[in-house]
Length: 430
Ligand code: HOZ
Image (cartoon, rainbow, N blue to C red; front, side):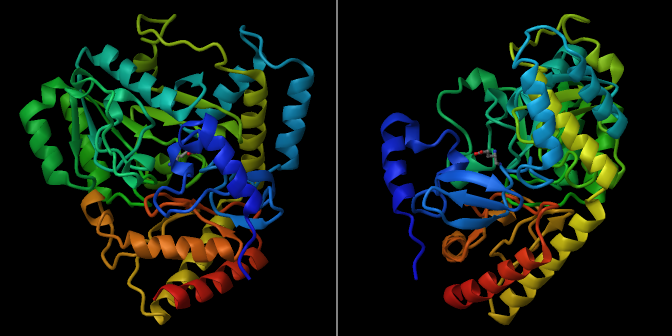
């Protein structure tokens, strides 16, 4: 029997009257899979509940923040306690220093850190700081990586931009992107050549050290070490955008997992525990140029917001105390191994890159190492798979070019139900 979603559909029609495309972020619009989005009512643990009363096993976790599952009691308690004391002071508070200390403790390459409100703000500010520090303008990014909707970074971008076929956006003056070079991920030769030609002009290189925004793409160790070497050689600031991977692929992020020390790091998602928090930080000499310590300006009315800080602190505290990472690794590996066996049995060409608890099922027989390979995926088959899983109560990222996330709240039974759903879905889409 088909899932009843009449209330969701009616509400989406209403939302479209007052919100562009009916959504507040394009990645949610089901643009890559067609149909109408599910309108959510509440969440708990590993589940989302929509306004029609359907329950879904959630593999998005709000696009990454909910590594502990929804409504973790420690996080809720911390938010409630902070709320009692006020929602925003517009003045320093103790909580922002505590979260900064916890971030620095977990990520040794970060010596000073500034709190902001989103990943976009974090990357935008990090780029400004790198340019201010080096006195150079050129930046390198990688095609298919997404670093939020920053003008200079919305060039050949991933995530919703890639899904909706607008990887570079109108509304951005050519001048904003004139100094942005977009290279192919994992291509060491192209990187070497670019540095050989323009090394002295390059302020920074920014990358997702595991890509989540063209689906999960794993860096080669040669790629990461080449980046480090070239940046050192040319005095270029190496920025790891760990908005998605920070506290996700290891407590200390991808830099801990791969043992590469960037000069700057951007964070978001998990450090807010589900409330809006971003952060950027790095070497003391670089971060010392940030105002008011130095001349590079960056500010925010709600930055360091006490409720958001409390949520982030509780999340990091719980992650440190419970160390769910081995369990997440095991559960996600069990899930992706199971999915791969079922897809193979159904004769469906696929690849499932996984790092820790992030994974993407690509309907693509080739190893996805970069954007050029990722876009060869069978997105029509993905759309059919997505809807077959949704019908069976499994809520996946609604694009081939996104990561899925397993949380500490996903049980053995949830994984089993997901695999049962996938077996039926694969039979329908082969
Ligand atoms: N940029 C996020 C996924 N890669 C999407 C955020 C959202 O739409 O909620």
